[in-house]
Length: 135
Image (cartoon, rainbow, N blue to C red; front, side, top):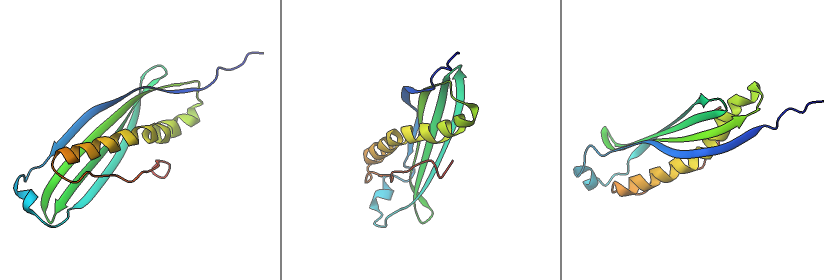
């Protein structure tokens, strides 16, 4: 009787794949007293890099505006390389669409907080989230 190999799910690497910060109306924007409205967009995509290795990229884009004027635009592409082996095909979607983004989100969140502070603004602290609802 042969046993099937145990499923494997492991983080191989977490990396910042892309980062963009724009403050198009500086320095005048710092004279504004009104608080900006924020639009947050989050998406993720996964692909097989080679057998058993998958890249998942979580992209978070934040646009802050006061009226029609852009205060800042931050885009973070936080990526991870994951070892996923011996997992049934029906379980791959939830792993790539839920487990991997849940792993990457805290890294993206910290990067956004850091770069908004470095750009001269109050750090943006995204609320914790879970990707079950998005998936």
